Picture 1: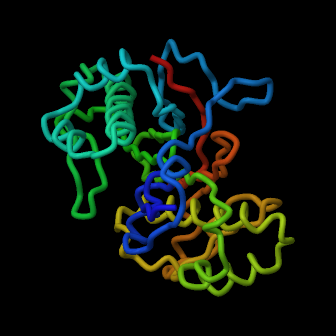
Picture 2 (picture 1 turned 60 degrees about the vertical axis):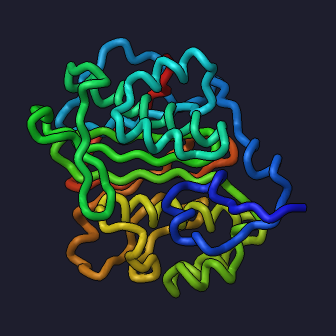
Length: 285
């Protein structure tokens, strides 16, 4: 058994909060674990997206598999900017490098389609906490977006003139402990988690984490903001919701959605100025 950082299977925000914590496990379990996406009768994700029209009251959610064949990876790599390429080559593990390339390449393909731009010509800007946005001179539709990835899956949220945040988490039963919850969750969330039947606690834990991270990402204030300063719903039987925040008047300005990207994942989206219409797509090259 060798010590490995658990960063591979958890979202980048979750990793940042636990940068000093080490997970003990086999390298194969950490670096090679993923879920294949299969379309079934109950799949909520539309696999047909020939014509993209983003209405002013809509938010489009895209799901993509980060595990692609060599040809797709090469095609997507050709779209990256110089700084994105430099970030990609710094990854030690090939799996992580390829997933980064796919994640950024797919982002470029999706956003450029709405703006009728070449994916390689798209330019991003970043706020002080690293939240990306389309360069103002290219953004005639006032598009806002957010993205998240964990293990094999990435999610992208695209909307117009609204603030949006999205988060996906690969579910790890060994990580969903009360000790971690008590350190990061609000008192009400800890109480809600403890009230759940044992067989629902892991799902409740990751529901809570994904919902909290989606809000932090929407606010664009970085992983340094204390997660225990606001409260979200978490019970599997309850709808996703922001329950309270420092500014109580702000709660009504947001609408939260639970997303179901695939077995073994928890995910959430939050968007400002409801109501909105949510549409879901699965990305294919």
